[in-house]
Structure formats: C-alpha cells, structure tokens
Image (cartoon, rainbow, N blue to C red; front, side):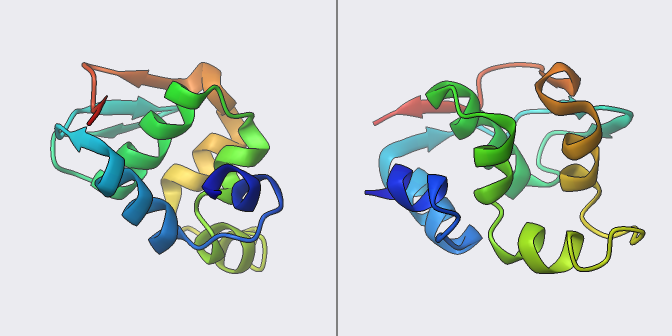
Length: 108
C-alpha cells in the first residue's frame, strides 16, 4: 500500500506520481508555496504531490517523503542548495504556506 511506503519513507517520487495518475484526474492548477508562486502547468509534479497529500491529510514529514530522493538525497544531502525550491519552501513554511487556486485532483 502506497501510504505504508510513504510513512516508512520507502517510496520514490515516480511511484507516488504513478499512483496519483492511476487514481486521480489532474487539472493543472496554480499554487503558492511560501514565497514561491507556481503558475498553471509549472511544477505539475509538486502540484500533484501537494494536492494528493492535502487530500489524504498527510503530515508535513510524510508529504516530504512523497518526493523520494529529491527530498532524501538532493535536499537533505545539500541543505544550502537552491534546487527543488518547492521542497525547500515546504520545509520552511509547511502546510500554512500552501495555497491552491483551485482543485488539482479529483478521485477517479
């Protein structure tokens, strides 16, 4: 079950995206993440993950696990880096920083 993998931090970003795409209808949606604005169609992977995590009521930490190695290796391995700004902002601002301009996901 994908939720068990997420909570155990044993899931890849690709597995999460595949699960979302198999179980939800995605509508590209603009969203704000802390001080970063993502226009419609920009950073759709992050939009999918944050929407999925919000729908399921995942914690901040479990949401970060959904990003797999982008979080575990790229961000944690280089805490002063400038890549993966949506992940870095989510670490800083948490759920309070996420604001969607519409509903990005609907269950199939």
